[in-house]
Length: 293
Image 1 (tube, rainbow, N blue to C red):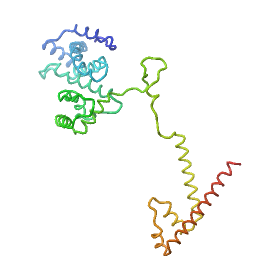
Image 2 (image 1 turned 90 degrees about the vertical axis):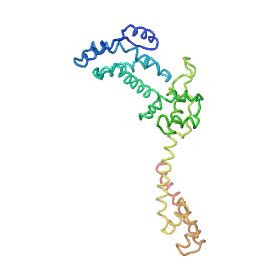
Image 3 (image 1 turned 60 degrees about the vertical axis):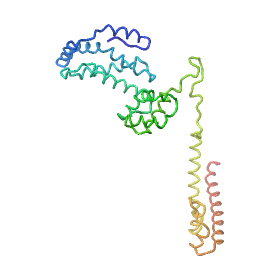
Image 4 (image 1 turned 90 degrees about the horizontal axis):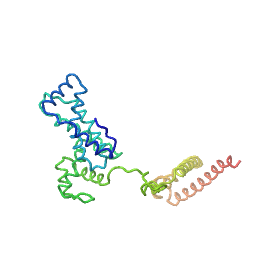
Protein backbone atom coordinates (compact mmCIF):
# COMPACT_ATOMS: atom_id res chain seq x y z
CA UNK A 1 0.00 0.00 0.00
CA UNK A 2 1.42 3.46 -0.85
CA UNK A 3 2.61 5.53 2.08
CA UNK A 4 0.41 8.46 3.11
CA UNK A 5 2.48 10.81 5.24
CA UNK A 6 0.57 14.08 5.22
CA UNK A 7 -1.12 16.74 3.13
CA UNK A 8 2.03 17.44 1.12
CA UNK A 9 2.21 13.86 -0.10
CA UNK A 10 -1.53 13.61 -0.75
CA UNK A 11 -1.30 14.42 -4.47
CA UNK A 12 1.47 11.87 -4.94
CA UNK A 13 -0.59 9.28 -3.07
CA UNK A 14 -3.66 9.94 -5.22
CA UNK A 15 -1.54 9.52 -8.34
CA UNK A 16 -0.02 6.26 -7.14
CA UNK A 17 -3.30 4.56 -6.24
CA UNK A 18 -4.57 5.16 -9.79
CA UNK A 19 -1.93 2.68 -10.98
CA UNK A 20 -3.70 -0.24 -9.31
CA UNK A 21 -6.04 -1.98 -11.79
CA UNK A 22 -9.76 -2.28 -11.22
CA UNK A 23 -10.64 -5.94 -10.76
CA UNK A 24 -13.27 -7.68 -12.81
CA UNK A 25 -16.07 -9.45 -10.97
CA UNK A 26 -14.45 -12.82 -11.66
CA UNK A 27 -10.99 -11.71 -10.48
CA UNK A 28 -12.47 -10.19 -7.33
CA UNK A 29 -14.43 -13.35 -6.57
CA UNK A 30 -11.39 -15.64 -6.98
CA UNK A 31 -9.21 -13.42 -4.76
CA UNK A 32 -11.93 -13.17 -2.12
CA UNK A 33 -12.35 -16.96 -2.09
CA UNK A 34 -8.59 -17.44 -1.72
CA UNK A 35 -8.54 -15.16 1.27
CA UNK A 36 -11.71 -16.64 2.79
CA UNK A 37 -10.51 -20.24 2.49
CA UNK A 38 -6.76 -19.90 2.90
CA UNK A 39 -6.26 -16.42 4.47
CA UNK A 40 -3.87 -15.64 1.64
CA UNK A 41 -2.29 -12.23 2.46
CA UNK A 42 -1.41 -11.61 -1.18
CA UNK A 43 -5.06 -12.00 -2.18
CA UNK A 44 -6.12 -9.60 0.58
CA UNK A 45 -3.49 -7.08 -0.51
CA UNK A 46 -4.79 -7.11 -4.09
CA UNK A 47 -8.38 -6.63 -2.92
CA UNK A 48 -7.38 -3.70 -0.73
CA UNK A 49 -5.14 -1.98 -3.29
CA UNK A 50 -7.77 -2.21 -6.01
CA UNK A 51 -10.24 -0.30 -3.80
CA UNK A 52 -7.98 2.48 -2.51
CA UNK A 53 -9.54 4.90 -5.01
CA UNK A 54 -12.95 4.16 -3.50
CA UNK A 55 -11.64 5.11 -0.05
CA UNK A 56 -10.15 8.36 -1.34
CA UNK A 57 -13.41 9.29 -3.09
CA UNK A 58 -15.47 8.65 0.07
CA UNK A 59 -12.97 10.51 2.26
CA UNK A 60 -13.13 13.59 0.00
CA UNK A 61 -16.83 13.84 0.84
CA UNK A 62 -15.96 14.53 4.48
CA UNK A 63 -13.54 17.43 3.89
CA UNK A 64 -15.95 19.96 5.38
CA UNK A 65 -15.27 18.88 8.97
CA UNK A 66 -11.90 20.61 9.21
CA UNK A 67 -9.76 17.47 9.48
CA UNK A 68 -6.78 16.57 7.25
CA UNK A 69 -7.85 14.60 4.20
CA UNK A 70 -4.83 12.34 4.64
CA UNK A 71 -6.12 11.32 8.07
CA UNK A 72 -9.60 10.68 6.69
CA UNK A 73 -8.13 8.45 3.97
CA UNK A 74 -6.01 6.58 6.50
CA UNK A 75 -9.05 5.87 8.64
CA UNK A 76 -11.02 4.86 5.57
CA UNK A 77 -8.27 2.40 4.62
CA UNK A 78 -8.64 0.79 8.03
CA UNK A 79 -12.34 0.38 7.36
CA UNK A 80 -11.58 -1.06 3.93
CA UNK A 81 -9.33 -3.72 5.44
CA UNK A 82 -12.05 -4.62 7.90
CA UNK A 83 -14.48 -4.90 5.01
CA UNK A 84 -12.15 -7.23 3.11
CA UNK A 85 -11.75 -9.37 6.20
CA UNK A 86 -15.52 -9.72 6.68
CA UNK A 87 -16.45 -10.01 2.99
CA UNK A 88 -18.37 -13.12 1.90
CA UNK A 89 -18.08 -13.46 -1.89
CA UNK A 90 -20.73 -16.18 -2.20
CA UNK A 91 -23.46 -13.72 -1.24
CA UNK A 92 -23.38 -12.43 -4.80
CA UNK A 93 -22.55 -8.73 -4.47
CA UNK A 94 -19.35 -6.81 -5.17
CA UNK A 95 -16.76 -5.93 -2.55
CA UNK A 96 -17.17 -2.18 -3.15
CA UNK A 97 -20.87 -2.35 -2.24
CA UNK A 98 -20.05 -4.06 1.04
CA UNK A 99 -16.80 -2.31 1.96
CA UNK A 100 -18.16 1.22 1.51
CA UNK A 101 -20.18 0.86 4.71
CA UNK A 102 -17.07 -0.14 6.66
CA UNK A 103 -15.15 2.75 5.10
CA UNK A 104 -17.82 5.32 5.97
CA UNK A 105 -18.22 3.95 9.50
CA UNK A 106 -14.49 4.16 10.16
CA UNK A 107 -14.23 7.73 8.84
CA UNK A 108 -17.32 8.88 10.73
CA UNK A 109 -16.10 7.41 14.02
CA UNK A 110 -12.78 9.20 13.53
CA UNK A 111 -14.54 12.52 12.87
CA UNK A 112 -16.70 12.14 15.97
CA UNK A 113 -13.63 11.35 18.09
CA UNK A 114 -11.65 14.25 16.68
CA UNK A 115 -14.36 16.90 16.46
CA UNK A 116 -14.55 17.68 20.16
CA UNK A 117 -13.29 16.55 23.57
CA UNK A 118 -16.93 16.65 24.59
CA UNK A 119 -18.50 13.36 23.55
CA UNK A 120 -21.12 13.81 20.86
CA UNK A 121 -23.13 11.57 18.59
CA UNK A 122 -23.52 8.78 21.12
CA UNK A 123 -26.64 7.26 19.53
CA UNK A 124 -27.32 6.18 15.96
CA UNK A 125 -29.88 8.98 15.57
CA UNK A 126 -27.41 11.62 16.80
CA UNK A 127 -24.72 10.37 14.44
CA UNK A 128 -27.21 10.52 11.58
CA UNK A 129 -28.05 14.09 12.59
CA UNK A 130 -24.39 15.11 12.79
CA UNK A 131 -23.55 13.84 9.31
CA UNK A 132 -26.76 15.00 7.58
CA UNK A 133 -27.41 18.39 9.16
CA UNK A 134 -25.28 20.39 6.73
CA UNK A 135 -26.82 18.74 3.68
CA UNK A 136 -30.34 19.34 4.96
CA UNK A 137 -29.57 22.97 5.83
CA UNK A 138 -28.26 23.43 2.30
CA UNK A 139 -31.42 21.93 0.86
CA UNK A 140 -33.52 24.28 3.00
CA UNK A 141 -31.38 27.32 2.07
CA UNK A 142 -30.58 27.75 5.79
CA UNK A 143 -27.08 29.17 5.40
CA UNK A 144 -27.09 31.72 8.23
CA UNK A 145 -24.54 31.23 11.02
CA UNK A 146 -27.30 31.53 13.59
CA UNK A 147 -30.00 29.37 15.11
CA UNK A 148 -32.25 27.61 12.65
CA UNK A 149 -35.76 28.85 11.95
CA UNK A 150 -38.33 26.84 13.96
CA UNK A 151 -39.91 25.54 10.73
CA UNK A 152 -36.53 24.27 9.52
CA UNK A 153 -35.87 22.67 12.91
CA UNK A 154 -39.19 20.84 12.72
CA UNK A 155 -38.53 19.66 9.15
CA UNK A 156 -35.08 18.29 9.98
CA UNK A 157 -36.23 16.66 13.22
CA UNK A 158 -39.14 14.96 11.47
CA UNK A 159 -37.05 13.62 8.58
CA UNK A 160 -34.23 12.31 10.79
CA UNK A 161 -36.46 11.10 13.63
CA UNK A 162 -34.81 13.08 16.44
CA UNK A 163 -36.18 15.59 18.99
CA UNK A 164 -36.25 19.21 17.83
CA UNK A 165 -34.05 20.30 20.75
CA UNK A 166 -31.32 17.92 19.58
CA UNK A 167 -31.38 19.60 16.17
CA UNK A 168 -30.98 23.02 17.82
CA UNK A 169 -28.14 21.82 20.08
CA UNK A 170 -26.26 20.05 17.29
CA UNK A 171 -26.53 23.05 14.99
CA UNK A 172 -25.09 25.34 17.67
CA UNK A 173 -22.18 23.00 18.33
CA UNK A 174 -21.38 22.71 14.64
CA UNK A 175 -21.51 26.49 14.21
CA UNK A 176 -18.91 26.78 16.95
CA UNK A 177 -16.66 24.31 15.12
CA UNK A 178 -14.33 21.78 16.69
CA UNK A 179 -12.09 22.31 19.68
CA UNK A 180 -9.27 24.86 19.49
CA UNK A 181 -6.16 24.90 21.61
CA UNK A 182 -5.77 27.72 24.10
CA UNK A 183 -2.02 27.55 23.46
CA UNK A 184 -2.39 28.75 19.87
CA UNK A 185 -0.54 32.01 19.24
CA UNK A 186 -2.75 35.01 18.49
CA UNK A 187 -0.25 36.25 15.88
CA UNK A 188 0.61 33.18 13.89
CA UNK A 189 4.23 32.07 14.18
CA UNK A 190 5.47 35.35 15.71
CA UNK A 191 7.92 34.61 18.52
CA UNK A 192 6.78 35.42 22.07
CA UNK A 193 3.32 36.32 20.81
CA UNK A 194 0.44 36.15 23.27
CA UNK A 195 -1.63 33.00 23.43
CA UNK A 196 -5.40 32.83 23.76
CA UNK A 197 -5.07 31.48 27.30
CA UNK A 198 -3.34 34.72 28.34
CA UNK A 199 -6.63 36.56 27.90
CA UNK A 200 -8.74 34.23 29.98
CA UNK A 201 -9.94 35.55 33.31
CA UNK A 202 -11.34 33.73 36.30
CA UNK A 203 -13.67 35.77 38.49
CA UNK A 204 -13.77 33.14 41.22
CA UNK A 205 -11.90 33.79 44.50
CA UNK A 206 -8.34 32.54 44.76
CA UNK A 207 -8.02 29.04 46.16
CA UNK A 208 -5.99 30.16 49.19
CA UNK A 209 -8.59 32.82 49.99
CA UNK A 210 -11.39 30.27 49.72
CA UNK A 211 -9.53 27.88 52.00
CA UNK A 212 -8.80 30.64 54.54
CA UNK A 213 -12.46 31.75 54.56
CA UNK A 214 -13.61 28.16 55.03
CA UNK A 215 -11.23 27.60 57.93
CA UNK A 216 -12.25 30.89 59.55
CA UNK A 217 -15.93 29.98 59.23
CA UNK A 218 -15.22 26.60 60.84
CA UNK A 219 -13.42 28.24 63.77
CA UNK A 220 -16.24 30.75 64.27
CA UNK A 221 -18.78 27.93 64.21
CA UNK A 222 -16.86 25.97 66.84
CA UNK A 223 -16.56 29.11 69.00
CA UNK A 224 -20.29 29.74 68.68
CA UNK A 225 -21.14 26.19 69.75
CA UNK A 226 -18.84 26.52 72.77
CA UNK A 227 -20.16 29.98 73.69
CA UNK A 228 -23.79 28.76 73.55
CA UNK A 229 -23.02 26.60 76.60
CA UNK A 230 -22.87 29.83 78.67
CA UNK A 231 -26.64 30.32 78.16
CA UNK A 232 -29.44 28.55 79.98
CA UNK A 233 -31.95 26.51 78.03
CA UNK A 234 -34.50 29.31 77.68
CA UNK A 235 -31.94 31.87 76.55
CA UNK A 236 -30.44 29.40 74.12
CA UNK A 237 -33.84 28.55 72.61
CA UNK A 238 -35.00 32.16 72.27
CA UNK A 239 -31.72 33.36 70.77
CA UNK A 240 -31.66 30.45 68.32
CA UNK A 241 -35.24 31.00 67.19
CA UNK A 242 -34.76 34.75 66.86
CA UNK A 243 -31.31 35.04 65.26
CA UNK A 244 -29.85 31.69 64.25
CA UNK A 245 -32.51 30.20 61.97
CA UNK A 246 -33.48 30.92 58.36
CA UNK A 247 -37.12 31.48 59.37
CA UNK A 248 -36.98 33.34 62.74
CA UNK A 249 -40.01 33.36 65.02
CA UNK A 250 -41.70 36.57 66.10
CA UNK A 251 -41.76 37.94 69.64
CA UNK A 252 -45.49 37.21 69.68
CA UNK A 253 -44.97 33.52 68.85
CA UNK A 254 -42.30 33.04 71.50
CA UNK A 255 -44.31 34.94 74.12
CA UNK A 256 -47.06 32.34 73.74
CA UNK A 257 -44.56 29.50 74.15
CA UNK A 258 -43.27 30.85 77.48
CA UNK A 259 -46.49 32.57 78.57
CA UNK A 260 -44.80 35.96 79.03
CA UNK A 261 -45.08 39.33 77.32
CA UNK A 262 -43.37 40.17 74.05
CA UNK A 263 -41.26 42.75 75.87
CA UNK A 264 -39.99 40.07 78.23
CA UNK A 265 -38.96 37.88 75.28
CA UNK A 266 -37.12 40.86 73.77
CA UNK A 267 -35.26 41.49 77.04
CA UNK A 268 -34.21 37.83 77.27
CA UNK A 269 -33.04 37.91 73.67
CA UNK A 270 -30.91 41.04 74.22
CA UNK A 271 -29.40 39.66 77.42
CA UNK A 272 -28.66 36.31 75.82
CA UNK A 273 -26.97 37.99 72.86
CA UNK A 274 -24.77 40.09 75.17
CA UNK A 275 -23.77 37.00 77.15
CA UNK A 276 -22.98 35.18 73.90
CA UNK A 277 -20.77 38.03 72.67
CA UNK A 278 -18.78 38.12 75.92
CA UNK A 279 -18.34 34.35 75.88
CA UNK A 280 -17.05 34.40 72.30
CA UNK A 281 -14.61 37.23 73.10
CA UNK A 282 -13.32 35.22 76.03
CA UNK A 283 -12.94 32.06 73.95
CA UNK A 284 -11.21 34.00 71.14
CA UNK A 285 -8.78 35.46 73.65
CA UNK A 286 -7.99 32.03 75.02
CA UNK A 287 -7.29 30.69 71.51
CA UNK A 288 -5.02 33.60 70.66
CA UNK A 289 -2.97 33.43 73.87
CA UNK A 290 -0.87 30.40 72.78
CA UNK A 291 -0.09 32.16 69.50
CA UNK A 292 1.01 35.34 71.26
CA UNK A 293 3.26 33.35 73.59
